[in-house]
Image 1 (spheres, rainbow, N blue to C red):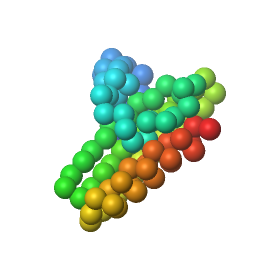
Image 2: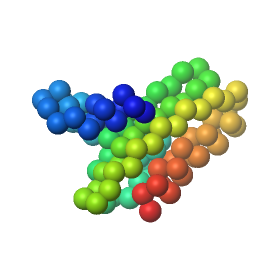
Image 3: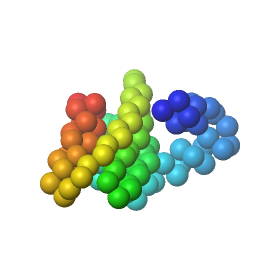
Image 4: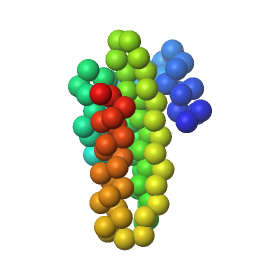
Length: 95
């Protein structure tokens, strides 16, 4: 989270490239899936054999919310529950 925040909080040319890349991620099915549209979102997902991860920044005119979720699962049923949980976290954070 510290590295993510440092990358996003700086204001230079590299920072703008990073922000633009994270803003235009094509995989948006986790934290930012059901976020409030008043928030601009920046995210990066990760997937391994039994793990799902997402890190996101939700930014409105008045607030910035950063969130990182790291999970581990063993079967398809757990995977579906974890994906739903991650989506709900993003939704709750941006209510």
